[in-house]
Amino acid sequence: MIAIECRDVTVQYGHRVALWGVTCQLPAGRLIAIVGPNGAGKSTLLRAMVGLVRLSRGEIRLFGQAPEKVRRRVSYMPQRETVDWDFPLTVFDVVLMGCYGELRLGARPRREHYERAQRALELVGMEHHAQRLLSELSGGQQQRVFLARALAQQAELYLMDEPLAGVDAATEQVVLHVLEELRRQGKTVVVVHHDLSTIAERFDWVVLLNLRLVACGAVPEVLTMANLHGAYGGRLQMLSDVAQVLEQRRQRLRHG
Amino acid sequence: MDVVWTLATAVTLALACALLGSFLALRRTLLLGDALSHAVLPGVVLAFLWSGSRELLPMLLGAGAAALMATLLLELLQWRFRVHPDAALGAVLATFFAAGIFLLSRFAGQVDLDAECVLYGELAYVPLELVSVMGVEAPRGLWTSAVLLAGVGLFVWLAYKELALVSFDPTFAASIGRSPRRWSLALMGLTAAVTVVALELVGAILVVALLVGPAAGARLLTRRLPQMLLVSALLALSSVGVGYGLAWAFDGALAGWIAVVAGGHVVVLVLLRRLRKAPASAQEPFAAEQGDDHAQQPR
Image 1: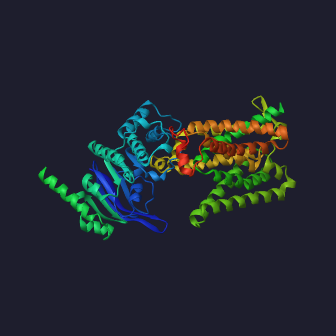
Image 2: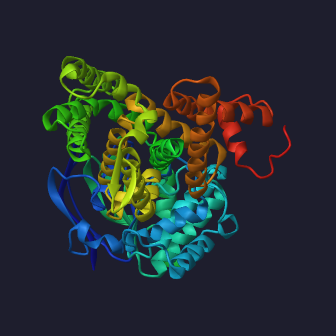
Image 3: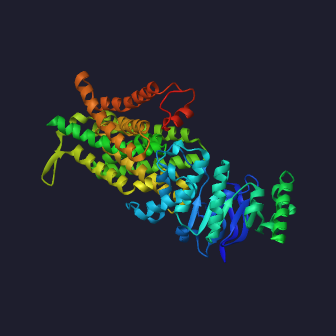
């Protein structure tokens, strides 16, 4: 089944082109990474999938429908640098916001929503910090709060913008564990991510981007030298690392 | 009785300003509130000249039109002509306000609206004009500010979730279908309405003190949004109370004293905080420590 379908997606900010004619289909129930160099349009593609940027050409369908029609089935997690962490709210307040999409104007969260927020906090190991203020959190904890808010939405499709950028080792483990867990539940997860070796190791599917689509497909087929050169040019030092990880994975598959 | 009417009016207005100001402060758009409160002036004067009365509706429409024009001009300057936000704000604020002053001085002789009153307001005149609504007689200024407070209160009560959401994380808000733009427009609209009502009570200039003072003070004193709203309301009450005491003791315009106290709160709170905490070398670690429960002893 296809979760996301992009047809000729083109986005311009003023005169600058951020995405150019991207056409791809992303399967449901997979762990999908969007990779590419800085300024390749990764975040823009993700934002376009939530309907946050206007396409100058092309269209995006989520589960065969326009993004605005399926908001309840989609959870979007922005980069954590986009908000002011001095805002006078507690961790729990923010996680609860994951339920706001279902609450109408004037409606207050009910017991089920509180329970959902609590469970989401437990999943990211932050249940003891529920009443802490945002200004007291470390970068990794901030990331976990955003992750918990996304989980509280109970969506089918998760779109996450760099959930692994600049976090501590413990948080990285938590995030990777949550991603695995979501896949196990049959959810579709699309993640903007930088580290090619984690992708080679953990992800199923890759969208390789550099303004245009370089390649899109299953990890072993897409993460080839030719493709990576196409996306990054010759300046990628970790290419050989990736090749190594992929080789190990192929061997594991062969023996296991 | 006159004193009671005056104080009741001032308190009602100050409470509405404090509630609204709190959200403006959190969104870091207090300056936009400032600009809007000045930009409505030409609209108000034109509406007054056109309708020939101080009816609220034409004044609100005029103010709304001017606020809308100012907002559009701001967007145009910033996005189309690439003027920096501070320069755009300053230019629009000054030009609109000057246009208002010009209109006022040009036509002041012909109508019952003088520049002094619009700029500084006159709380003391509030009890002079009594209006009876449903058998209850009270000053017109009190009725209008009561309607305003009810409106702002209802807005914040109904849209508390949405306001917190779009102020904290506009991108996420948009992703679940809550348009940050629409809510920011609603806040701006209410700010314009507050300014119009405040115009004849405390004046176009001093209303800024009521929007900024209690909200900024509450932000310093509290760490959670609900408490912040409550404390900003308390600071608004104390601004009016202390301001009235000072006006009584030292004489002078009541509105002026209220504004001085509203702004003075912030200065005093900042100084108190500095004294209470150990001297901090940098701003950010200080702010972070402020929220840490284990940071009771100075380092």
